[in-house]
Image (cartoon, rainbow, N blue to C red; front, side, top):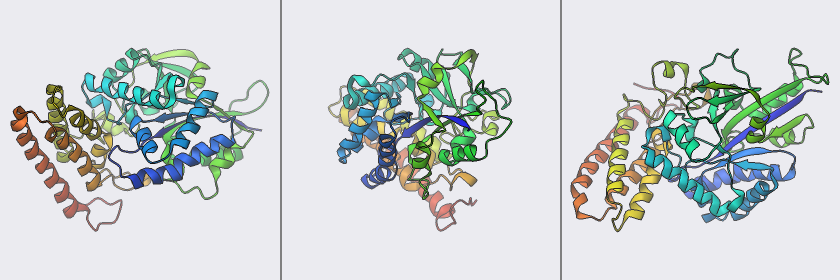
Length: 407
């Protein structure tokens, strides 16, 4: 009988500016489903990343029982939780102080809900967007490992060994590499295929039983919200005796033969072409994309002004808007990238506008009269961004078939 060890990291996140209906749909279709399945299968162990901004929204919408179930599983050791950035920004594109702030806010929020049981060993970098500066900060904040996509290793497929421990030469962090191909698919279906069509050339262990290790890291919303699993493959899989699961920390603790590498600046969506062209965060920052460059200019102005007026009477609200406006989704939806097999074009003018609104509100909220000139400068840029968004939408994407680019 084939034995399969599955290490699965699930990323729970919704944009901070998402409407209530979006959060509720994700909770009903994915989050409750995952947690309910784990409650019915106590031997199954997963690693979860829950962003602080989502936890706050879940509580406000009446999902305290769901949060309590997660806490019980954390206490029992069935799951582990990672650290992350509270509002899911692209950390590598932020100043050090903003990176540290986002990480510490996330720590505070998770400790509020999970208390002393929240002692994360690992860290989930939003979008798995690796950068040396980010890794060094994560290490200084006492985390032990990070998750990256295998493309970040810069190794050829025949050089990559998932039974080996990889260390980041730059920071000293352990690295949990996800298998991209298996993570891009629906993992339960992938694993059932291994069970049913086990390859006879796979490694034989001393007991004569063939084994396979599946390493996946995906958005939690894949389980229900984004994938219609009408056959309940996920629930059925958790009951199979062939399946053994480990948390990421358990998996890393069992690896040997450490090898130090210098990961490439990259994300879990990076392609080899992008990396060859020195575009490690292409989906979030393309210098040829006028909307994205405008958004980053506005973000820069917002950070500069909010950090300059820390004693402003409206600092709290100004800061709150800035944190929300830095979420990576705003920039992702402006990429208009064609994912072909993996989904439609990443273009949504309303979502882009939500992020831009948060950034401009962070500057508008400041009460100090000295901010007048900065406000006018930001408003001009904001108007330009909105014009670019809606010009592109009406001219190129309105009434066009989903998934097609038009020039």
